[in-house]
Amino acid sequence: MKIKLQVQFHNKNVETTSIEKLVKEDVKSKGVKMTTIDTLEVYYKPEDTSIYYVATTKTGEVVGNDQPLYIG
Image (cartoon, rainbow, N blue to C red):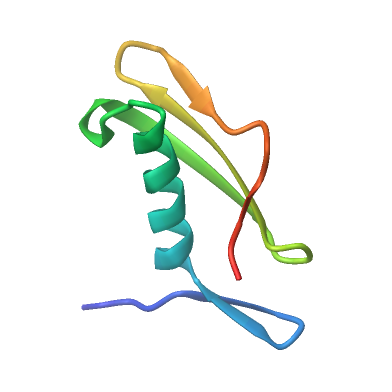
């Protein structure tokens, strides 16, 4: 089964796969390999399209974003 999950807010649709892709690109840009990630928590605020995340590696290192990522 394939699921397509979207968030709808104020006549805008955002696919969760787009949010996931943006977050993963930002994590990689910080020099962290996705294979080292143990948990990845993603927070999306549809009212202003901002995205925050906290990634914890298998060794306990915590990586996140202080400035929001935005998706259109």
